[in-house]
Image (cartoon, rainbow, N blue to C red; front, side):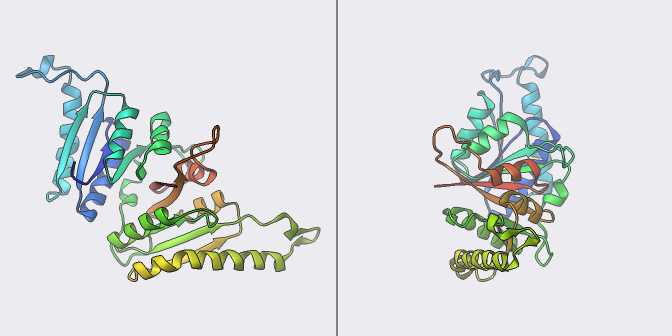
Length: 291
């Protein structure tokens, strides 16, 4: 298969929004866009079947309409469509393994209620071997990466006591491809011994912040050298990592977070920062698996 960005379609406005975001991404990266719809009851393709008795008619129409809309906005983009007779979870995981990127839609609820599309998307994002991006429908136009020179860009969440090479590679590559700035954010909770009856001991918090800032600087240094044209800012927030990352992504066009591929038995497949990002961030969220 050609290198591709794959998007899952289910006929919802959310999945169409994801398809448009994926088209922008594929065009910037000079990749093929693959539209995929999976349904276990798809029938084997007969020859010369009239539309009125073709049980695949609606699936074909969904694919045709999405492909025509995207091709009209991206005339130079290679777009292919695939109808797959399989369970959606299985099909999406299989597609993710053969794609540069998998893009899925998200439900457009209010911030307090917000969550990305149910069990299927969460199952896929927690198990895919390749990056998965989740996109909200009502923010499709805002989600599109800005032109060069505008203030919004990519925010990447960094956990400094764990490997972050794959996460930084994706974040820097995306920022470079789009010509937008990158902001690296690390959240660190204030230690208990910093609290005193009269308030917070600023000597302790300043020491914690300086230590985290130096660790963040060291983590970014080789990537700044590899991508000298990417404008990079680094931020340490003395707050829970989850709250720090969600807050920092408020005006971002993309939030990048990591997810461990391997977990101890019984441990959740998404850590607290990734969970917070996919449930509460209002911008598109890229979840990057790493060792």
